[in-house]
Every structure is written in structure tokens, then in C-alpha cells.
Length: 215
Image (cartoon, rainbow, N blue to C red):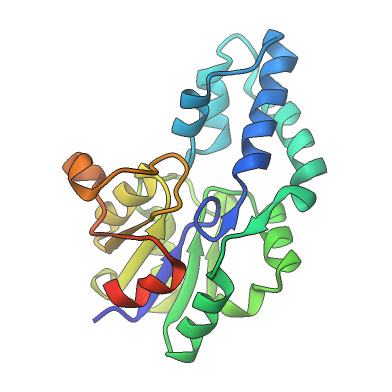
């Protein structure tokens, strides 16, 4: 019986796609003079930023490329983010039904809390684990397992809801149910049969409230 819901943040609860993509393109323009490949950018969704930057700009010190990205990102984050349709209603219903609710994200704490504050979502979450609180990032299950430990929930009673292949792999590695949101930008249009086994979701939901039909 599923009694615990653990959400990714970017691309799952919050539409941060535009600010992430534009932060990337600003970084590409800064270091290369042109914009980057969209397929590569989308494939980084869910990764720790340092890993993505090191791969994208191997000749640039990681702290330098990260600084350029994050400076632009912070300056535009508040104005460019939007809550996905139905998310607040879904969170409200989850709490009303007595589910334990957490976040396991690769985003840093400062902007995560800014996003939750902008839309008044803080009270819906019982536990939150951000990038600073783990040593091993997705697809390693550390972030989910830390949330579950704090919530005193066994993995078999939990579902991870995310938008990237790393979220699905993280869920499998943690032993939780894996649910993919159909509004995922990086995986949009794929059916369950399109994924290799290690990345395959157990369910795909097209609307936020559909989560109650698959858990």
C-alpha cells in the first residue's frame, strides 16, 4: 500500500524548463560564442549541475562555468518559473488523504525554497532533501532513501514521481514505485515500452490528479 509520495521538483512540480534552458544558453554564449545543442541540454535534466558543466565545457574550470550559469539563473528564476497545472490541487488532495509527502531534488536549497515560497507550497511537504544534503546524486537512491528515513516509510510503501530517466532509475534503485509525469520535456511522447528496463516507469500520468489512479 502506497502511503508516501516523493516528488522531484524541476519539471515535475515546477515548470523551470525555460529558466534552465536559458541559463544554459547564456553559459554557452559566454564560453563558446554560440548557443548549445538542445538535445544535450535536455539530456542533462536531473543531473547535478557540476557534472553537466564539466561534460559540456571540459576546458573551463567547473566553478567558473557553474558561477556563470547560477548567476544568470538566480537573477531570472523568480520571474520565469511557473507551477504546472493541477499541482497545488493534487498536493492539497494528497495531504487531505493522509499521504506523507516529500521532495528529493538535485536543485540547491536556495532556489528550491524560493519556488515553494512563490506559490505558497511549503506546508504541503513533510520532508525535503536538496542537492547539498547528499553525497551521491541521482540515479543513486540516496536522496529518496533520506526522505523515506525521515518519514519512517519503507520503500515498498512509497512512490517517486519525476520527469527524467534519472528519477526513474533512482526510484528503481531505492525500491519505490516509479511514476513519470507526461508533461516531462526531456521524455515527452514516450510510452512505457519505449524505455530500457532500468529507466522504465511503472506508470505515466498525463494530469497531476491522475496520480491517485496509479498508486
